[in-house]
Amino acid sequence: MITEIRHIIFSNDEMKQVFQTMPPDGFDPQRRITRIQVVEGPPPMVQVHSEGAPMLEVESYQLARMIVGYCRNRKIPLPKDALKTLHAQGDALCFSIMSTLS
Image 1 (cartoon, rainbow, N blue to C red):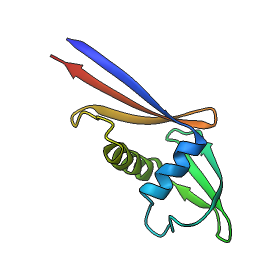
Image 2 (image 1 turned 120 degrees about the horizontal axis):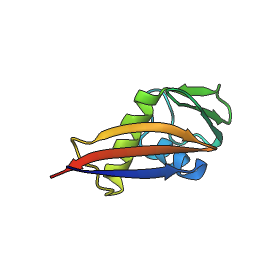
Image 3 (image 1 turned 45 degrees about the vertical axis):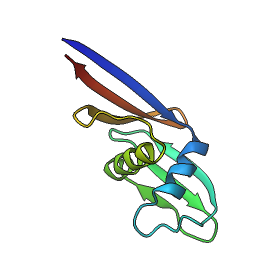
Image 4 (image 1 turned 30 degrees about the vertical axis):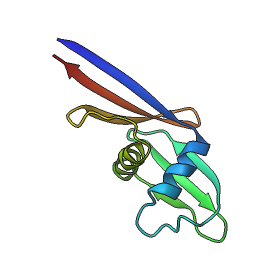
């Protein structure tokens, strides 16, 4: 059995695009994001700082849903039955995909 592991690294700039493309409930995508901070876990979370609004903390389960939607929007292929995990990698967020190939 062969296992494939892919890592998609989201920089702060790319995470801003995720929040503007696939915003979580209650987040205005037109809001200017000033800073995104990845907080190590387990599980990791993201703190979003924007002008004129309190800091927003986004948990890993919400991040995973947003990232999957963003990847679909950008036509980045993701196997449906693959194990998907998030972890902090410095200032970036790493989305890992592990699938078994037959």
